[in-house]
View (tube, rainbow, N blue to C red):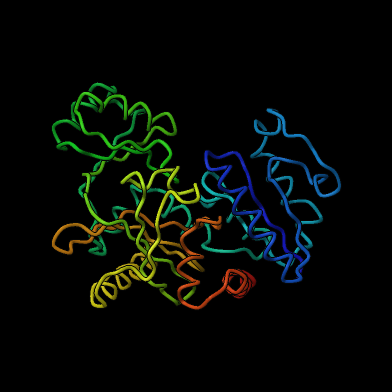
Length: 333
C-alpha cells in the first residue's frame, strides 16, 4: 500500500510530531508498505533530496502543507497517515481538506477534531453528558476585559492552587499550576501567548490516568507516575522521567466506570478511529475527566501504544488497525 506520512508542521508540538512520524514511518516501512515520509513545511522534492530547513519554510509551512496535499505523490497514495500534532493538523482543517479531496486518513474527521481540540467546547459537552470534570471557566484576552480584570475575576472565582492554560494547545504548552495569587497574571500572559482564549481549572490533586480508544475497543486504563509530580513536557517526552503502569492498579469496578465514561465522551465529541481520554483520580474515588486527544502521540514514550501492547496489540498491529478503520470510514465519503 502507498502511504503518505505527514509530520512536523508549524505548531508548538512540531518536535513531538517529528518523533511520532519517524516511528510510524519506520514501522510501516518494515511492514512492507511504500511510505512517503513528508515534513509538511518542506516541498515535495524532499523525497529525492535533503533540504535544509530555513525560517522561510517555517513561515510558509501552512501554505506548503496545502501544496503537498495537491501533489501527485500524495494524491496517488492509498492512505494519508497524519502524524501532525496541534494546529491545523489536529483542529479539523487538514481533515476537511482530505475529506474534500476524497483521500482516506487516520482518526476523526473535521467535526470531531475541531470539537476535541477546543477545550471549552469539550468541557461544555462533558457537562451536557454528565462526564465529571474539574470546575472551570474561560476568558478571552481579545474581548472587552483587560488582563487585570481577567486576573481579578480569576482571583474571585478560584482558590489556589489552580491550573491556567490555553484553550486549544496540547503537550502542556502554555500551562501553569498557580500556587500563589501573585502569579496569576504571569500565568494568564503565558497562556495567552499561545492563543487569546484561556482556560482556568481548579487544581485536582490525584493520580494521573489515561484511556486509549481504538475503534470500538476501549483499552486498559493506564496510570502515569511522573518524576516531577506533574506530567509536564519533560516527563511526557523524556525517557525515564515517568513510570507507566498498565493496567492501572485500580479495582475492576472503577476501571469499568472510567472506560464507560471514556466511551460516552468519545461519542459525545464525535470522534472516530482512535484517541485518548485523560483524567485524574481524586480523593474518595472521584473522577475528573480533562480532555480527549484525537491524534495522540506515537513516540517511544507514548501512551496509546503502551496500552495497546497491554491489550495484546503490537505497534505494527495498532497502526494497521488504525489504517483499516480510516479506509473503511473515509472511502465512503
